Image (tube, rainbow, N blue to C red; front, side):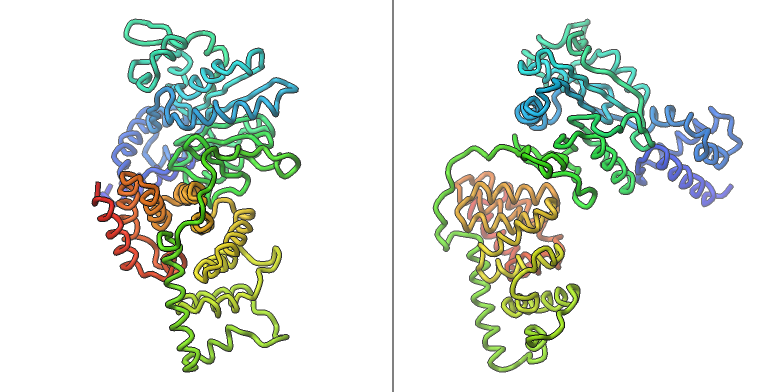
Amino acid sequence: MTARDRTEQLERFRRAVGARLGLRFEDDKLELLAEVAAERVEATGARSLDAYVARLSGEAGRDEIRPLAARLTVGETYFFRNANDMEAFSGLVLPERVRRRGADRRLRILSAGCASGEEPYTLAMLVRSAPQLAGWDVRVLGIDVNPAAIARAREGRYSPWSLRQTTPALRARFFRSEGRDARVVDDVRALVSFEERNLVEEDPELWAPGSFDVVFCRNVVMYFAPEVFRRVVARIAGALVPGGYLFLGHAETLRGVSTEFHLRQSHGTFYYQSRGEEEAGEAAAVPEREGPAPTPPPDARTAWVQAIQDASERVAKVSAAAHAAAAQPSLREEALPRSGAAPREDGARVALALELLRRERFADALAALGGRAPAGGEDVDALLLRAVLLTSSGDLEGAEGVCARILERDELNAEAHYLRALCREHAGDLAAAADHDRYALYLDPTFAMPRLHLGLLAKRGGDLEAARRELSRALVLLAGEEGSRILMLGGGFTRDALLDVCRAELNACGGIP
């Protein structure tokens, strides 16, 4: 067999395993895959790797899920991991569920991809710490495809490494020493059960409608192929009660994956709440952010949006001169259709407006889109472009109204959150401005402009350490930012100009940390 034949066989094995487990295996895992493939060919007595792949792809392949999962899925975790998530769960989600479920006093929680059980036990400990849940029927279910991990979870015995983020008080309350190890107390273990389940497979019993109040699926879906990610999230959405909660890993987002959830932020973290209850009745909303009242509108000389407005004024003068010289008559005529002319299709109007934006002719671009956004008739891309043009023209109130409409239809629109941040700064609500920047960055960690804006807001607030940190990150992101996004959201500045602004502000704060 040639090297090419072996490579092609291994690729077929990679695809077959990916289909069974839903996982993506990058090229750096090829050596491990080759090792596991050889093991399974020998263990099953298959004539060849291709014969084993055929077995794996057929009905008999279900028997191979357990040994493959034991070798190819590794879940390193610990108790009270990502403390902000746990604070949001205990400080907001549990009290909200108590209010909603007070009649039946029943709560169901799922930990999907629970590995060796630290996460579901942590959730049960937080339940035991909530006096308002005394006497409730609470169950925490931990599921994982790895049988060895489930066996360890059921044992409930852990090394000091798994307890590295557990305070002495929590250790004393919820664990009993067994030599160097610690075992979870029976009072907590009574709330938790564990099952072998494969998230990739159809499982009507697990995903029955309304089965869960809260689902934790952290650092799991990031390893799935995109189509598997979408299927799993759709199942979770169907299994949650209306207004139920979903916690993902910090590197995971539903942007472009699902529209069945509202994005929430509290306790320094992001999570999701399923749609349904809010639309049907009273909203189960996150409480208003506590903090000082909004500051007075900032001095225009210090606001980031002023830079955009200055650029707009400069552009307006250039545009006026161009109009006087009739430099672009045909484009001007296209931008301002005659009264009674048939309306252009959205795509053509947006394309024309983008070209006018590129030429920094904001008023003409707005005219090309039409005077006002039609109620419900303009798509999100056209609305976003309208918000950009209103911002660039200095109409921040109008821009914020359009952003609100975008976010009503697409809560996970990072660009709309960024524009909303600019509008909130202009209104003097700097805390809300920073919140919207953080939303944008959670939804798209590569987005440079909200990172730059966060740095400038931190500098204005006197937090030079945070300013240096954010501006340093912005400097890196700006170098790789999409040119189209700089055109749309860079306030009339080129990439080089934005880099110069970032460097100058960073130097003013003391340089790179």
